[in-house]
Amino acid sequence: MSTAVTMDVAPVGRMLYLQTRAQLVSRLRTPAFSVLSLGLPVMFFALFNAIYGGSRASGVLAGEYLLVSYATYAVANVMVFNFGIGVANERSRKLDLLQRAMPLPPVVAAAAQVLFALIFALIALVILFAYAYVVGHIRLGAGDWLDLTWRLLLGSVPMIGLGMAIGYGTSANSAPAVANAIYLPMTFLSGIFIPFALLPGWIQKIGQVLPTYHYGQLGWNVLGSHVANEGTGQALIWLAGWSVVLLAVAFRMYRLDESRKFS
Amino acid sequence: MEPAVELIDAHKYYGPVQALRGVNIVVPRGELVAVLGPNGAGKTTSINLMLGMRKPTSGQVRLFGLDPNDRRARSRCGVMLQESGVPDTLTVRELVELFGSYYPHPMAPERAISLAGLDEQAKRPSGKLSGGQRQRLYFALAVCGDPELIFFDEPTVGMDVESRRGFLDSIREFGREGKTIVLTTHYLEEADELAERIIVIDRGVVIADATPAEIKSRVVGKRVSFTTALPLTETDFRGLPYASLDVSQERVRLFSSAPETLLRELFNRGVEIRDLTVVGADLEEAFLAITHEAEKEPVA
Image (cartoon, rainbow over all chains, first blue to last red; front, side, top):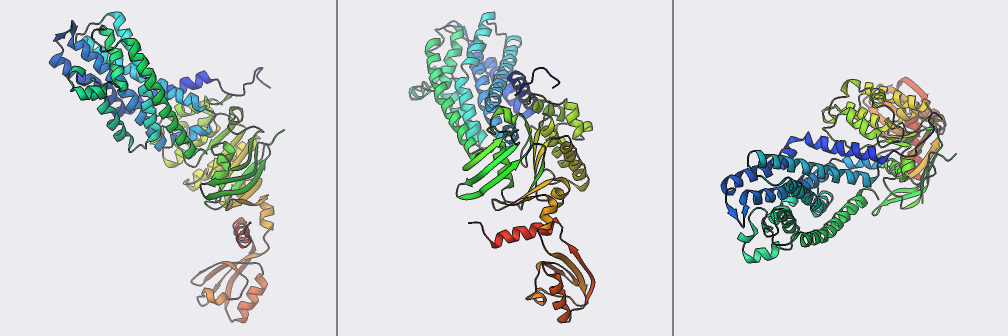
């Protein structure tokens, strides 16, 4: 034997690193996909910031409020569209078959998808923040930028569940339609696009239970607890509950797909 | 030492459809085996069971004595599937490096790439490869982990004659290095020239498991071909001992278990025969005869 130590299986760390990198690289080379996810939040923010950004309410600059809105939108967008539709695409192009025949543990493949989505979301945030700082003249405290970032990444777990459920539960053809049909109304009803206070009372009642509502609240707390309708703790409890529900749905969809192809 | 692959009394249903009806295949290490059969015979299902991609409805599957889904077993196998995909935008080099990382002792990516004959395409995105190059990429991905056992499921489908030749040479080379190879194919000449052992599957059962020579010798009979002065039709052969008759204009080709009787009878009927050749069966005829037998005596 030429080597003193023989491994039975490959080290998981390097596998996870290369798998995540491959996901990221292959998605970044599909510009139509990434431009939408990275560009739309900046476009919306630029537009609304130009119109309303200068006004003030409850001691907070509207531009700052809008920045949080579109940062929330940006991360959720990546999870549902880039991640969810991406998974559905990979499945329809049978990328999962060969991978499944390899000694790559499914949990490593799934972890790489989630890591990819988180990194991609971080890229989306950095681009939006850079625009807001340089062009939009938004000045949050140094700590606040970071605070907002970790809140949005941590709070995106239910969105990862939703993205995964769409990815494994739909075909490549139906995924964009399903994603839009679920996600767009959610963002409108949750006050992400239109400030929650401006929505009619009955819509507010629906909106208040949605994960995107609590996700938005988690972000707005960065600007001061008086800006948000609920505290960080309460938002986190809601999001934890939604995480359990949506990840369970995602896992169920994954198992159904699995049992169709691999049983 | 445990065999590389064991499939023991494997049955497989897809809903009500029975794909395998008790398949027994044991492949010792270092053997080059071809699994041969018509489309829908159960070749791919057998491979999928061996790989752990599918579970048998009943029966047992072991890879190196382990469960086929055990990572230690998987880490010793490479595979080229019939239907699969890789991300279009990743280059050959990137994909080979990625797939190598799934294995404990991968070969250098350059080596896998040059074994597959893709040196010039190493930096090309997989989506921009031609059909044949794509197959070679899948070959590189199958061997890049330097596995002991490699599965090839219909690897030469869609390849032109030249790339097919090169491809079979690479597979043979791997066999010589002591690798265990399981190859499915419906090209008989491929199995004949490549494999040490041929397993014929038909309608979910193994109907033959022997060396190519043994399979050929199983068939008593000859291939007869000749031309006639006047075109014949099938009715001219009524009552004669023949199989797989092929009449086109004056040219007649058939297979007969009793060529002497057949020819005597044709002469008696006044058929004028020219350019007569009578030769031993090749693998194709053997295969037809074997599957034909199995059809007559359905397995209960």
